[in-house]
Image (cartoon, rainbow, N blue to C red; front, side, top):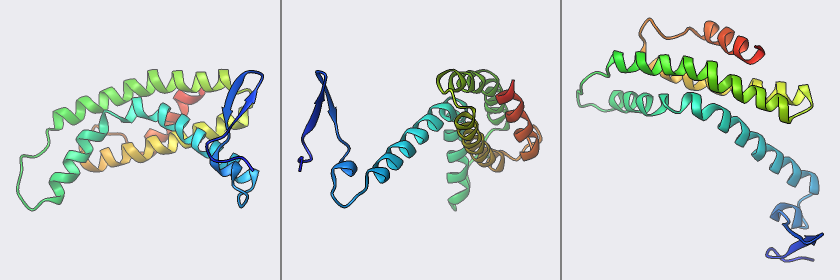
Length: 155
């Protein structure tokens, strides 16, 4: 039985075996499922971060201010509006590029569709937190955001 620190040498390349696959108690399929899940989560994060990343600090700041009992200056609507504009631009540019890359690198349309669906869900979740924190008229309603994301991903 190989130890945790052992590696397999294949044609001169060293390949480490995941600990899950080496464990006598875990099946190979569980190890593959775990690695696949982690890989998909990584792809989703890489696609979502450029779009929603700029919203997070502002959203967290507003949520933190609302959670304290000390009165603080209200968050600037102009900052929120600027972040919203950047979000729309990132959707049009970064999301479109990410989806095109997925289609280029993954040959199976079903796989791309599943990943894009999870990417859209994560974007909607994070934008929803931004919407709740900002509450002005310029933010997209959930249904409009869904339409926008669908149009960007299909286009």
